[in-house]
Image (cartoon, one colour):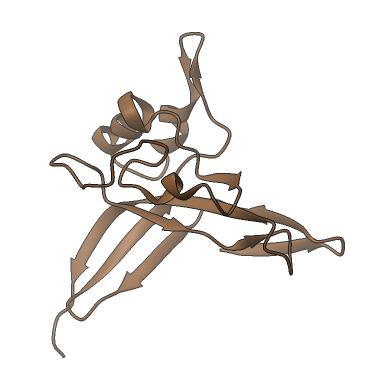
Length: 132
């Protein structure tokens, strides 16, 4: 998911797929757009999302309660609302219509627990496993 591009602990996250294997399926998630916005009539977030997900899903993450959620952000260890069903909102119960998000929270900076890198990805496809 991350790769080290310089000797001074500078980390970069490229658009990636995260594959989660369960007993019965392969679940493919894509990291949400990073540093893309919805402003000034130019929806660069939706355009960026449409490069790796269908148009309906791209529209969902570009508007409403998901519009402000970045694919990568930095949070303090006490910011526990970043793992809520809709990150940044107070509610902790999953509601009908919530997107299937995956949240990863590695430590930041390297070898420290002062902050957390928060990575949000959305489920774009789920493939059933077949026997054989």
